[in-house]
Image (cartoon, rainbow, N blue to C red; front, side, top):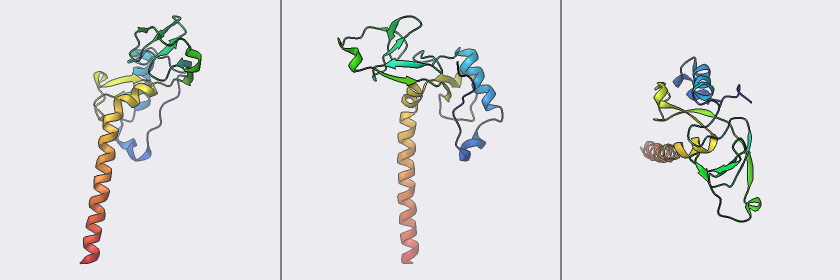
Length: 147
């Protein structure tokens, strides 16, 4: 199992995280979560077969699971045509999107799929804010040029 891989932090955001973030992240991902996503139960470092809608094949228990880690029954007769594989990497996520709030109840070990789903609303909010800020700066520069 791959345990030393940690999702890199962008250099401009590094100062937001505590100095012991790699160790804290490892405790959450491999101590508390035992190397599995806390939302869907996908195992870290393994290749999993999935259907693209959250359902994935749990090779340890020999059945399909849904996007929440519960046992699922696929309805499609030809799963081979739908199946894809992906390598699972578990990252430590801040549930309230605040990297300064590092209490254990605010941290979760999430696979890439669950992490992106969890962060989707925050990413939309930031994208809107950055576009709004760029427009405002553009308007300000136009006014300065006109003056």
